[in-house]
Length: 272
Image (cartoon, rainbow, N blue to C red):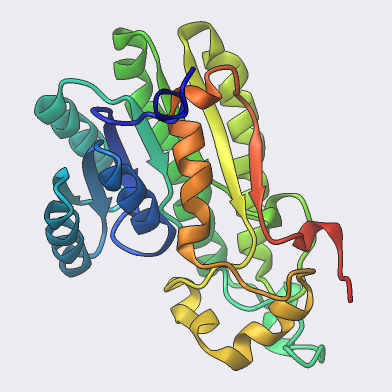
């Protein structure tokens, strides 16, 4: 198979949650630049409008809807409208998520008493789990009936390396939510394989986005994360585009229940 066919996403109908900024926007750009038809779902209507305009200028067929992924009715609506517009949903990037705040250590590795386990509020815990884990479950629930009906599809979930490692600079609620996501991906993959629905995850390390108030846009805030990375860098959203195209395309036809780590080697441990 030629490489243009192997990684072909042209003409696919793609739904992306949290697609108006950060990693989700990078997914949308990768799909748009290669001819997919895109529905961008995001809670921020202003960012959504800018994204639709920018992707349209790339020559893509694109629409956008304001969606709160914690609301089942919003998810059902955007799925129905994507099908009404494009006739099917070939790929869904389940990407929307939020930060759980800083971890129990500060950048200088001193204890952050406000972030101690016993002081994590019920409100923070519930909000992070609802947005990062429960919304993944509900998004998959919303798209599966359509994918079964059309004979298959791809579900690509944004997880995190925090799903499988402990963290000192990342909040406990976030780590717990992503651990749940990683296991849910595997569970959904084994159940849905019979229906030709492939379920995989992309697990980034730290990425410079708006999450957590965009703190990694500040060079000082990046330093401990850069020090922990053998490549001494923090990723940018464009670094996730290759994995997105791979999992959306025929190249990954026989891949399900996998987690593709994109972290510059962070999970390997610190180096020189």
